Amino acid sequence: MSPLVQPVLRQLGLWQTFLAQGFAPSHRTLTSWDQAGLTSSELLLEARGPSWRVDRRAFDGWLTAAGCRAAECVDAKVCHLAREADGWSIVCDDGNSHSARLIIDATGRARALADRQGSRAKAQDRLIAAYAEATTSGPAAPELLVEAFDDGWWYTMALDQGRRAFACMTDADLARGLGLNTPDGWRAALARTQFVSALGSRIIRLEQPRLIPAGSRYAATTAGFHFLCAGDAASAFDPISGHGVVKAMRSGVFAAYAACDCLARGDAAALDRYGAWIAREAAAYATTLSEHYGSVSRWSERPFWRRRRADAPSRNPSSSLLEQ
Ligand SMILES: Cc1cc2nc3c(=O)[nH]c(=O)nc-3n(C[C@H](O)[C@H](O)[C@H](O)COP(=O)(O)OP(=O)(O)OC[C@H]3O[C@@H](n4cnc5c(N)ncnc54)[C@H](O)[C@@H]3O)c2cc1C
Image (spheres, rainbow, N blue to C red):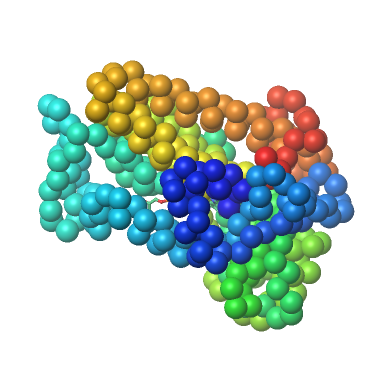
């Protein structure tokens, strides 16, 4: 998680308890991107603090428990939503019904509630992750390692107990051609990297690679009648940004402010202001993303890079999403 998690957790009053969870700080990222060598981004002297290596299941569980202490929690899936005169009625898969004055869809890329209102998110690319976890031998090598290759890029990072995550990021059509959902196709793509494959050579046992949608998406309508989207439901960022979780939490905070202004103060424009903020954030992200991909010229004729360079309005090699 990006260093920017710190101000968000401080605002929520959760920073000290986050530190007490024992998640590992990460002071260095290794990258091979626009040049063949490896560069190191040091976060040791970074004023915003380190980035964090978190077990996502443990982090989500901790955050959910903190949320449940501040609000009533219903552990069920929303399966039906209907608009009423002054709010919404909700049916959950446990058979219970609820009413709400305002809905915030925070169901991630599923957009389980917003899509039912007929507001679809627009896919900006077809990025997909071929993700696999492995048991490895040798020292842990705790830094996040990101390496571009001719059909996309890879990342790898250490998990607990000798386990390591590897992901090959490419476009969905290219992933099919490469057979990335099979161990053989996945290993063949791994062999085309220089630095990630060095860590891959330590794999003792590989799990079946899984394909996970990871492209950029943005919904033009993130706010409607007593309805908001937050997190990936509002806009989903490419994982190269390293900002998905923090962005989701921050938009949750702002969505709560907008909901409060709308319901408690009768501020009719609050939800539209929130929607405009999401739109500005998505526009700034799109510019930085295309600059970041546009800085890679090593494989400009390969489809993955050609598609992204075609999108790049300006090519600023010093711009790095990973460093923001
Ligand atoms: C390959 C990959 C790597 C990534 N790496 C990073 C990274 O290193 N750092 C980072 O910050 N971000 C990363 N991200 C992005 C990050 O995972 C997302 O941006 C983040 O999880 C979005 O949070 P969210 O709460 O909006 O959605 P989610 O985390 O998807 O949560 C949505 C929740 O809604 C629930 N839900 C769904 N449908 C319903 C329903 N009908 N009723 C009730 N609940 C429902 C789900 O069960 C889930 O709990 C990565 C993404 C990908 C694909």
